[in-house]
Length: 483
Image 1 (cartoon, rainbow, N blue to C red):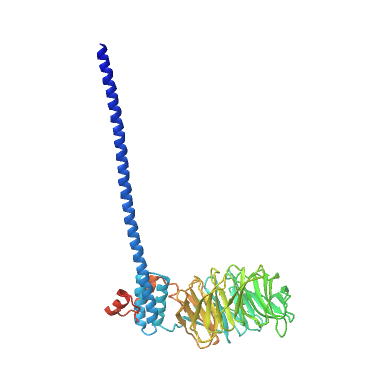
Image 2 (cartoon, rainbow, N blue to C red):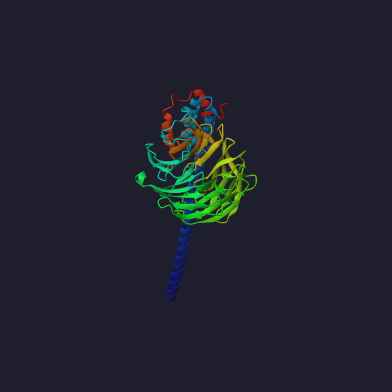
């Protein structure tokens, strides 16, 4: 009996050991299988990631190759345009089809311009009886304001070219003007220093305005044209006001004063929209080598003002601090105009040296020189998207430039006479210019806002043949420049 019990105990112990061994074996097997499965999964993931990376790298390499090919085609298009406009157009089309980029788009824009070298005006605004020196669009683009040496400012319908309002204050020449931000009022400046604010009604006979007169001591008195009562004044200048510029929001005026041996000053005035209250925000005494400043422009945020002069310099000032921030030096001779880009990062200037220049506003670094005019450039202005610049030249042309290439994409030619002003519409699709001839001109710039697809459609109207086998071998299949 005792032996039987011992035998049973030994059997139970043996069974327990076997069970433990079996469980341990199963656990080890499960662990081994888990590790193997994880390794297999990791290997699969690694293989998949490697394949994806190779595919991505291949796509990036192909994209880079296409980008290089597109750039080469576009560059060769620009090289061929002067001698062979047809080949230049074909190459520009292939460049844009190969890869879309600003450079490829602008190369095709220029190629399209070569197919119709002179771009005539869409509408001519005739009504002034003397030189027209400035024009600008209303904020919504529906109206155009022109100012003239005949002592009038005229508001026109942009889509018809018909005059809407004729604004006449003092007998002096109207040298500049601007719409209010809401488009419901117009501000004009006369060469005698008079500043007018006109409310735009439905009928000219209902027009009421506020204006100003200048006394010989340099005081500008602001008055209501309906009552004849003084409502405010700009006082304390060094002499009679020679010129003035009003900011787009109507809160700032920059004036230039002093001549005939008197101190020369530029002042920036803070004012309300009605010019009822004013105060000097900044005073600049011009150096002796500067007879006077020729133009001024405010930054989009109205925190800075840039002034240009006959010295060949442009200066950017902080209005509130009254501090000179940077000087832009590079023009050979007087600087005729300046404008900030829509984002305030860049400045474009024009000069009597036949050029316009693009600068970095923060540093004053020269970025681009636009050459092509054969006479003084009176004005330069950015497009609303900042991609283009329009210039007005005394050579009787206005030019639209692509900033990605620094080249002309359109040459605008209207009635004879020096072009005094050029400006884009708010949507960037039109340009208004004015000339010594006494009229203003509105031009359509279809290529300015056209997409890549739209540019290709425009080009299809001029493409008469495909590239030859030899041309394809040279420009598409080869790596040569085609020269």
